[in-house]
Image 1: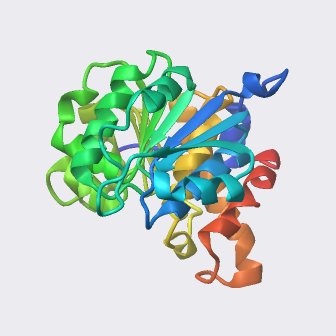
Image 2: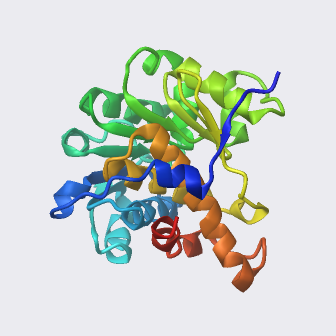
Length: 287
């Protein structure tokens, strides 16, 4: 039987209003994005800027050391640190104490955008889980989900504030089989299996079986870098104080509606992921 889920509408979100922090940037939290490689620094940039657009107060980027200087110029709002690389340009799994210290101090850590080595990503994920405080929120995306599928007990029973953002390929790895047609059901199964909130193509589920779905997403969101924007958007909402399920629902809506806002200018499938970034604040503000 298909699962029951609530449609994410502006009315639902208005009843589930986002926190509005007062005070300085520290009140809006620190987001740390861990990702990238020599050849994929753009994923970290997209996720990081999306986090700021969603309301994060402080942004830190940890990416392959060969890309750190250019990232610091392209995202002058962020602290950028370079992580050791393999010969192939992937981030190594033993980056040292500097990353551990940043994880310890962050309010939200997003792991995965642009990472390219599954073994090293698994080591990075274990480092993050070891160093993060119990209240630190985590967003796991891309290769971090592949690494999690190889170690499914990492989160089970941990009680951590975690959101997983799989696409269909990543969902297949996490499930150990091809997903069925009812993505509500699959999201609920994944949430229960990994003890996390799951955002699967606009289908949101919690480990206790609550579920929502976003129905306004369009084909244009299936573009390179779009998932990195969504992961960063989620991290930014968590940073400003949203709980994981709330952040996942708001992020799914803001991601989809930001895409809709671009259609009159670029068509249904002509816009770029980076063009979503400037639409995010207005979309959130006008719910």
